[in-house]
Amino acid sequence: MPRRRHGAWACLALLCCGSLLRAAAAYCYSDEQKVADMLSSKSPYAKLRGNMTKKDLVPESCHPVQLWHLVRHGSRYPSEKAIQDFVNILPELRARIVNVCKGCGKLCSSDKKLISYWQSNLNESIAQTLAPEGAYQQEEISSKFLNLFPEILPDTFATEDYKFRYTATQRTRESALAYARGAFGSHAENIHMPEPTDPDPLLQFDKVCSKYVAEVELNDAAMREERLFQIGSQMERVVSRVGERAGVKFTSVEVGIMYEACRYYTAWDPETPSAWCGVFTKSDLKVLEYWQDLKYYYKSGYGHRINYEQACRLVQDLVRTFRRRVEKGEGPRGVFYFTHLDAYLKLMARLGMFWDNTTLTHEDIKAKRLWRTSIVGPFSANVAFLLSRCDDDRWFVSMAVNERRAKLPGCRGEKSCTWEEFMALLGQYESCDFDAICENDPPVVQEEEGGFDGSAGTPSTLLLVAVLQPLLRLLSRES
Image 1 (cartoon, helix red, strand yellow):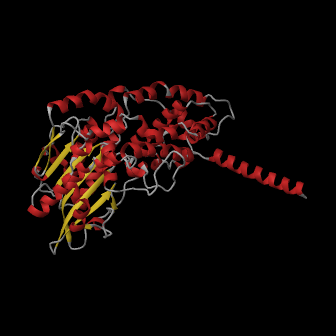
Image 2 (cartoon, one colour):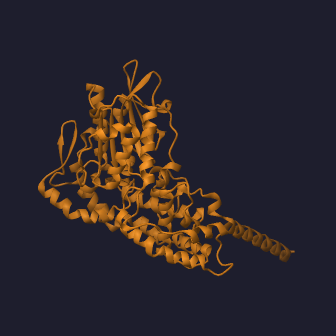
Image 3 (cartoon, helix red, strand yellow):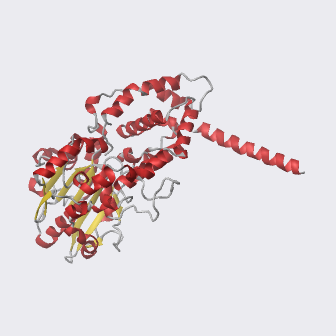
């Protein structure tokens, strides 16, 4: 009898293993294509945007008065190095996959066909520039706000009613122009957009924060958790599984290049399956997503206090903008800022958004975490604050993240904060001492009453920034 029981258990184990193998072999990316919400910071906005309504943000008997909108640039092309990899290495990987022996690997025929038909049409001249899909995303976002809040974006256009600002990059400039087209149509060309500062002390505050540069950007130990995960067993298994699926042995570098191609091609054309996503299963992409989440958690999130403490600069600008309207009836109808992922994520952390009550580490994947960059920080990620005035002369502040109503931690209302709650939560950041937080000596920003004038401080500060800029640009290619 014991032998029979053992035999039965052995048969059951074989059946289970067989079922798992068949399931793995049966997965066909071409049939599902549902991976857009698993590609971290390169996720396409079109597949993740919300569907908010005016009622979601404007309390009853109230009307919108002012909008403050911080927007990450739209989908862009990769760095020169990544383009070189796509052009030089991917064709060789494609040949190895297509020419694999018959019966080797687990790719379904349609996934293999996608790879066989893939061709590169990139060149280095477009590195890090805004892709057409990215411009379309920005137009769609502003069109949505135009339709919901005509009080903010009326037919009668006056350029002094709007403040635009972007960083000294092609992708943020073109994003700002596309946003303006979506909101103002033919009036967009009349909008004044000041020449950017490089680096921008408001929209790229982390580039002029000495403490952050020293303790995070230039400190290998700051990213220890991300690196331990990258060289750990879960990532090793991804490399192994991708090889088994394609029937080809790959290095971790080659898998990384295919992962980047999967993400970028999906971001450029969300409606067309990306050939290079076919080599990954959803389980693989979840592991890779967590790797990226760790990266941004420690680079721009809750992993280090200085990451979010320095973001008080943007909160200060938000509070001052709204307070000027509430107390003096002054200021533009709309404030529109176009920046990069790092500044956006740091602001999210400063606001207490997407905070997990346990620290993310390399030891295990926290499947139910809130800090998921695929959802929080895709291309064109944006956070909007709407100031509304009510018939009883009360004021409310509402918040939306990626066109979904969001609740500012600490607010009691489901739709919005009262003005008193908003100031109790964020008013403290009006006195943000950025230079003290960042241990900047000499000070970086010359400040005017009522807001930042956008000028970067003393000659010695500018010299230091100029020296560090080439290195910082290399470190921030993922933004």
